[in-house]
Image (cartoon, rainbow, N blue to C red; front, side, top):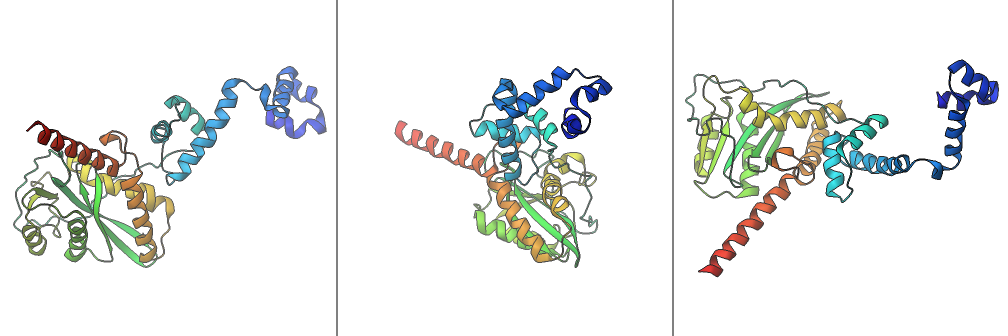
Length: 307
């Protein structure tokens, strides 16, 4: 109402408009005085203005995908104490909202004829340290040049993406490339790591299984009937879902493979080093791993001192 009066006051006058709108003229004049002199606004209104600038900054700095929860967490991490309900209220007034995940779509095709490794995870997708359990999966991306497929390898401990690859085909080579990147980057100790996937033909292929064996990694595959259950998808599909919601659906349409690869590289770096993940305490994956190794080093030092 007040903005309407602002636009038409010169044509019709304030009092006549307020009479039609059934609004007290004093209410509008109070609004006009505050517009001329912001110091007349309430302390809450003045604080809201400052918070809106920080909310806008945090939201834009994080790919415009954060909802109220993540914006609130990030602001408090930066030393800006604010209530979550305040962030939610202001984001709603500003028209800002986070990315929303769509329905999960199955991409891998189970190979019922190929021999599969045992399920060593048994739906217990937990790890007590980095490089104890990896999970792998891939998803698809539509481009003007045709379909692309994006594979991820994720370390369960901190949900960190340790390997990824973009390909035009769903052959074993492309998931192997993602695995090779993870092996090169992490250098896991032999016989200390389990790799879990669904029963997709790429992951149960002879070449993939042999490469895991060469690296001293124990393969694990979801049992029949459990490959696509909600508990597996809740972890292995989480990265795919976030990737599609936060990057692919919000930045498309995609023209070329090169554009998808570059954007994926940028998103993975942001995800690993900046994005806040609630399951690991509302911190980025890289920070969670750094905290583990710091505690590990301190415990070893304490042990040496005590001996």
